Amino acid sequence: MFVRVEEAEHGCEGLVHRSELSDSARRRALREGDTLSVKILDVDPVTRRIALSQRQAAPRPDP
Image 1 (cartoon, one colour):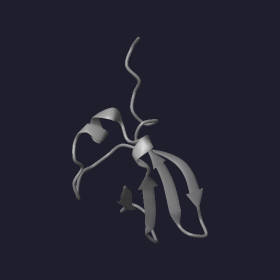
Image 2: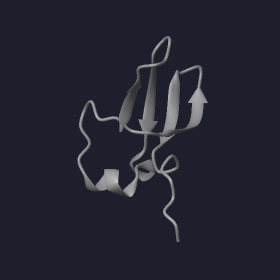
Image 3: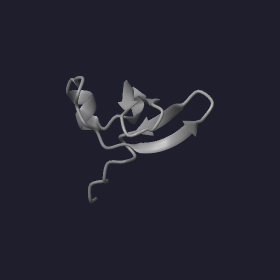
């Protein structure tokens, strides 16, 4: 899933691979305009792309 990073000064593209979506996000259909909390995994300044993870940003449930 590609996302637009609106806060970026010169614009960036981000990608959340489906394996990095939370279980609940994978069960429901995401739509344009949905807001997600994500963790930045990698930034490529040359291509201005960001690798993101919703799974790693989500708090883990207590055992």
